[in-house]
Amino acid sequence: LSGVADPDDLAAASTFYRPRRITVNMLRYLCAGTLCALLAPALALAADKPIVNEKFSDLEPAIQMLRQEVGKDRRAIVKANMLLTESEAARFWPIYDEFRAEMVKQGDRRVKLITDYAANRDSMSEDEANRILKDRLDIEKEKVDIREKYVKKFEKELSARTTARFFQIDQKLDAAVDAALAARIPLIY
Amino acid sequence: LSGVADPDDLAAASTFLYRPRRITVNMLQYLCAGALCALLAPALALAADKPIVNEKFSDLEPAIQMLRDEIGKDRRDVVKANMLLTNSEAARFWPVYDEYRAEMRKVGDRRVKLITDYAASRDSMSEDEANRLLKEALDIDKQRTEVKEDYIKKFEKQVSARTTARFFHIESKLDAVGDAVRAAKIPLIY
Image (cartoon, rainbow over all chains, first blue to last red; front, side, top):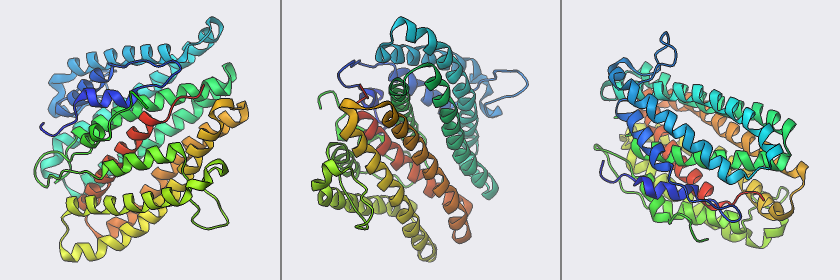
């Protein structure tokens, strides 16, 4: 893994400015999570629908635990940066948890995609290359769709500015994860 | 700008991993400079009739224009070094690539406008403006994906699905770095 960005470098990408600055070290968890996802993740939320390539199914419990950890840290960062009043908080957090639950489902697809890619990279067929590429873009689209849906939900409960601030924080966290993934996933042969 | 990631840290994020075909990339410095400039005060009008930068920053238009051209060239070099196409593949690949990047530049124009609008109104943003900017940000992400979908088909007509996948993989690495730089440099709304 030489030449790979250190997780701490990437943590810098989520530094938030004054006011309300916070130093973030959850990115270490995120990076560990993505690395694990690449090397051999596994996770089956419901037993009937495996979300990891079968080649890596022995690592399922580890990735499951890591993702839960990341989710908690992510929530803590949002909390520290939103600085909501009590009355705002009472309206914000139920929607936040619903939003993240959808995003975790979306993350399942991504885990599957990455492990499928890792399992096939050395000998990928034309069909598989095309399927994986399309799936990737589909996942991107789905992410935007979920965001659009939740912009409306948040704006019913909070001001547009508070909503915008939340999605900005969420986007910063995603950007850090995406950069970590980009650095760690090798190109197709 | 204390606490901001050094461009060199982020450059590491685009290091293309693993043999074969590894390359060290330093174009990210340009990307970083570009993103910073875009935040501080960018401007660019491709056609005179449609300004793509907030009027508050229009004096910096030529500088941002130059930077974007520079980044485009470097980006092309990174792709070239990592695709390792045969002559015959190259003859089919590059015309589609240049068409594709021209489309992406239009997406980039929207982003420059968004960022400068945000910078211009961040201190005193109305509810309507906050809502408009957030929707525009999501719309731009969507458009980027749509352009990619369009061009997967065009590339696959000219080169193999694996070569196409490799190209979009490189693209997404470069985009991820650009996104991370912007995320690090653009401050939160008050």
